[in-house]
Amino acid sequence: MKWEGGKQSENLQDRRRMGPAGGIAAGGGVMVIIVLILLCMGADPRQLQQLLQNAPQAPARPGGAQVERPETAEEAHSREFAATILAFTEEVWGEQFQQAGQRYEPPQMVLFSDRVLTGCGAAPSAVGPFYCPADKTVYLDPTFFDELERKLGGSKAEFSQAYVISHEIGHHVQNLLGYSALVHRKQRALSKSEGNEWSVRLELQADYLAGVWAHHGQRKYRFIETGDIETAITSANAIGDDRLQKRSSGFVSPESFTHGTSQQRVRWFSLGLKTGDLSRLAEIFEIPYGEL
Ligand SMILES: [Zn+2]
Image (cartoon, rainbow, N blue to C red):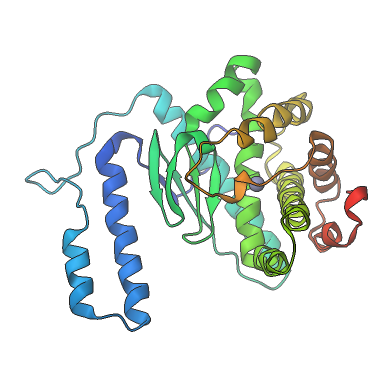
């Protein structure tokens, strides 16, 4: 994949060098949001003030700066890569939304290590990359990609990594377009297994969206190189369900749902890549489940 030298997004936050302080600082931010929501619901402001005072604060140096260690070359590389892919998604989705007469609100992306506090709760690295709709943020521990890199070799694995990121951005697009809410509404009236089928549809739609992004991205940037698609498709299986289903308990993310079979994932990603057609998004909810 050709990405070096591309524009980098400003919506990326790297919390990897903050140590535990990074997570705690975020916790404070989340706490402020919780307090604001509670205030809107008519909670007692004095009790809330107490809650805020008891919230953990990030330790600050006398100058007020966060305690950060210097960035390693590896960290700089993964930060630049993620920021560039994020910028590619912002430009492509910005154009696609504009053509549909809508405005694209780009998500945030947070790089973390070990664990992170999010608008959807605290999450360990083991959950893999995920999108939190509550704070419209993609969370990624880049060491998730290490295994992929070991198997394929660094540069070969890049488009596969971009595919993983664009799948998560796909969940953001679903959130903006109302598909996530639609599915969650349906699921409330369904049994667990029937509800799971709708989760699979949502996951496959995110794969389709990743393909649509790659289609338009390729036209714009010519970033796909020979062999990239094949590598992405085979590795998507390796880092798909098997890995995602082995997540540790205690954190419920949309990614803990079944993603569909490898074959289904490849089919929908490939269809998005081939057509680049956003107008076919609803199809995935209309096809009988057995024919997905
Ligand atoms: Zn997903």
